[in-house]
Length: 266
Ligand SMILES: Nc1ncnc2c1ncn2[C@@H]1O[C@H](COP(=O)(O)OP(=O)(O)OP(=O)(O)O)[C@@H](O)[C@H]1O
Ligand SMILES: [Mg+2]
Image 1: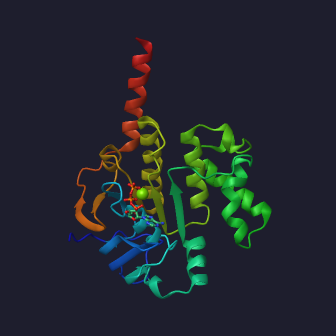
Image 2 (image 1 turned 135 degrees about the vertical axis):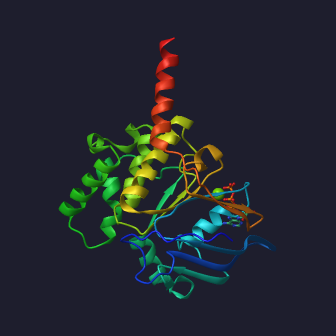
Image 3 (image 1 turned 120 degrees about the vertical axis):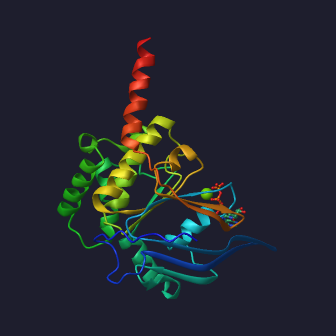
């Protein structure tokens, strides 16, 4: 296991413990008579401020593990500490509150409300908190500005491109100011150039606000923009490698853009 230095941010726990601390976590699904062991004794530590990729073959337990990290599901055994809190001991209600207030989710399918404006989609998570409508809309507009979509606030989400929809989903995930962003194949439905642009946005959010991000991807071409790559195999961590040469996604996006312009011109 590789040791990682602790990158301090506003969202880091008061003591020196890591943001995420998972110890020997197990999860088996029961389908009829069949037991499907999905996560089999995973231990993982994520320091605050890290941007890491989770890779591995289909069925290796990546999404199941993300569900556990995201408090969408509970582990059968093992320990999960988030920001020092022992999550595995919390009640259902406490878990839901933790999930709504401290965690952000982005998925492959953008999961936006299609006939609702972009602004209201982004503001939606705040309706579960006591924030006035006016304040919700103000915060949503600020968030849209951060993801580069201020000019699309009044569009319906089905009037946007895939890349733009994913930006809206990222804005929605971040409006509650989560301490951890979980992204399960966020570039899976996008062409490679748009995928790189989404990675540029995530890199920017990670750098500017020290946001901790765990991202599942099948593509090495996407993982090269993250600081660490954890590979799952058969529900276990097969490798855990620090990326000492993190590539700059905004430079890669600019290069891809220039290349596309050039080939269009010929
Ligand atoms: N809700 C569920 N009920 C029963 N079995 C499940 C459920 N979700 C996942 N599984 C099983 O658990 C194992 C791990 O699935 P998981 O979705 O975590 O894999 P994954 O690594 O995310 O795969 P992919 O890359 O295809 O998304 C698989 O064998 C899968 O069939
Ligand atoms: Mg999956």
